[in-house]
Image 1: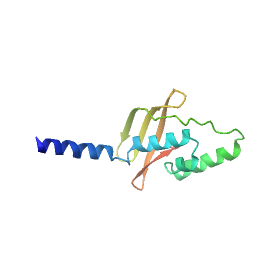
Image 2: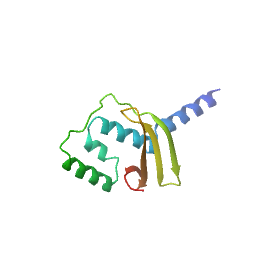
Image 3: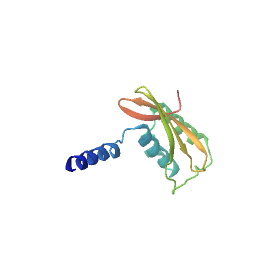
Image 4: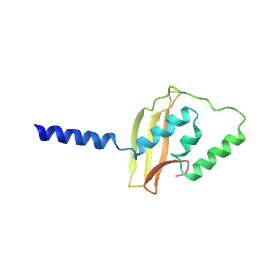
Length: 114
């Protein structure tokens, strides 16, 4: 019984500590964006995607809507090989959205590219 309990605790620890997964990256990215924290959100983007965000923010005179109470809700994730993933989630407006992610230097990053 003790062995089973120890195994269960170890399994839970591994699952809850997976901070470098497509889901974890998508969660941190979407919640940062929803709160309007662009600098935090950029940590979870590829460099090219972060540059696109900077350019879009400079060109837009509108303020970015904020959803401080947004909590990430994943519908599904799809991982292809070791470097490509998609995460489908519910956006702050309630619609189903999809994020493209790539693995760069061992870290999952949101990308606008394919």
